[in-house]
Length: 342
Image 1: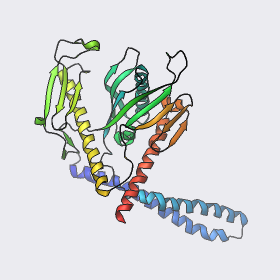
Image 2 (image 1 turned 60 degrees about the vertical axis):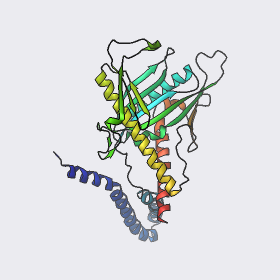
Image 3 (image 1 turned 180 degrees about the vertical axis):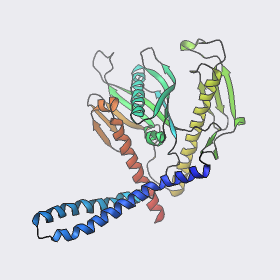
Image 4 (image 1 turned 30 degrees about the horizontal axis):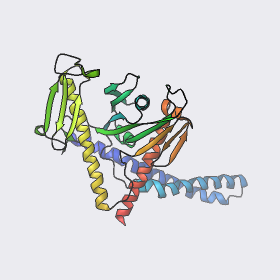
């Protein structure tokens, strides 16, 4: 069995891999460029043309390394890069149509998680009579899930004609999503050394689970509600069969919400200290619009619009937005780091 020191060294080596790879690629391209220069004076016109094409390609590669690759390596590794994710989805304006759209988005994230090798499971949900969901909590297990999906936090707006709309009028509905960092740690800590909460600060209440209309769905007190007294954060869980299972799930969600508060505060404090004017991700902000009539998805934070709404809802279109948002974040972080060094 590997010792903690061995694991730490292996993790550090893995973190250095991008630097090693970037430098190796740079050195290889530079050597190839030096070997290409004499060929540009070759008496054979075909050889000169090939050398000219190679020269253009290699200079572009070196330029990208100087302008993008090397500056991006100045950004410290994310402290949340190994965390899983919890997605909390809540239907907003739009009534039953919002609940149906929530179900559409839930399927998008479940499908995406499966496509990248993560495990997704719905740990809590509240269904509506129309076949949608008022709210749901989706657990996604996979290294890097939180860092990849955190950009999905915010208000998602859909514009479409409901199936029940006889006049063909377009309705606007919304779903609010919060992406929380999920750790496997069961002791209320983050990465084993930052305390998130003390057990004496958590009020635990048990009660009989209730179904639709408020009726009790069992005769035992299996439902659990947790209240973190210092912050007022509450978590209720009743979807599991036993009190023990509901309590475990409730503490899992509580840890995720408190960790999210901690990370959000750290970002706010850091930006306040640096007087940074980089735009933050306000969770009450409309971040994306899904327009069915125009077959278009638009992310308002980066001004990116992509056609083919079906590709987003049923294919891999969400990956295009996640990649673009990650690149935007890397550019902003690079600017912060460069600004600090000036």
